Length: 138
Length: 138
Length: 138
Image (cartoon, each protein chain N blue to C red):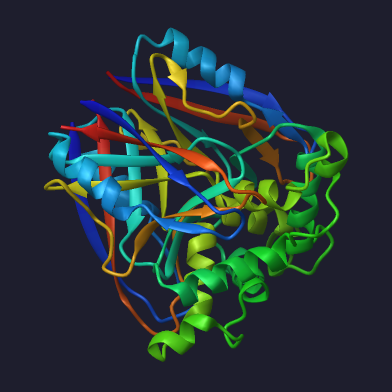
């Protein structure tokens, strides 16, 4: 059995984060599927979906390491192609990835207490993000 | 068809690694599912599941790069929140991710010979880790 | 319903990239499955599968950050074990990961317009790569 949901989130640009746990958990509770996997996938190549303890300190630390890894104002060959300024966004997102798959049982995601499904915007401007939540199981 | 298994592993703290391949392979062999996917997911936000050649050199190299990326004794805003000392753990785990999905056919994971399913503890203290292995297929 | 396909790609060594989108999309179109997930998994521990905007600039930027993270000519303990020279390859692949899971609906992957499924070779020599594309759904 497969259930596909989409949700949209407005972001404020690079470093903005959103806790997706509750919206995914709600889809899991109401899907009619008892056990299976939830795949959370962000459409687009300049944002990350991962898990982190969703508190401002850990999120700031994560963004700081992303900045060290691929500085916002570094030199990127991507900028030469389209006149874009989001080379750092592409690199960050390609490294950490646009999706995650989380098992659920008894209609409940197997996340830890301090482990939240999190969207990390990497693009340099505000975006309207489409997130696909696909549930599969029985 | 969905089969959910959990296993527990005691870790020694940051940098400790465990080869999960055999336990996952055994669940695949005995699940009654011929072909499908195995999703290996660690409950908690301070550990990594990935694949690597499970030999001490490659593992030491991986840990060294994680240390360069998010130093154990760096300054983290997460520390200010709870008095924790594991800011580096959260950043490492959020970047590399808590899970992996591996296909299997004929009750056999499609891993390469030198490619092992590996848990990398990132927390700064020993942990008892719960790992969910969810198999789905037909 | 589960459909497993494999494809092979010849790579030119570290930094070589291949756009896998069309071959995966074709398998999705012809599998007989309407909706579900595509898991793209590379057999072996020295290559990455991710999504990126597949244009030479963004790819060069990604490779440059991988080089900064785990330099090709750095010192690796893995080299001491087998006389290999691909310690950088193992570290890069373990961090970014060998696989991705992408939902599809109406026989169409939910990728963004500028988001391509991409194989990034990290090994230091040319390789013949086996990629498993497993489709599951209904």
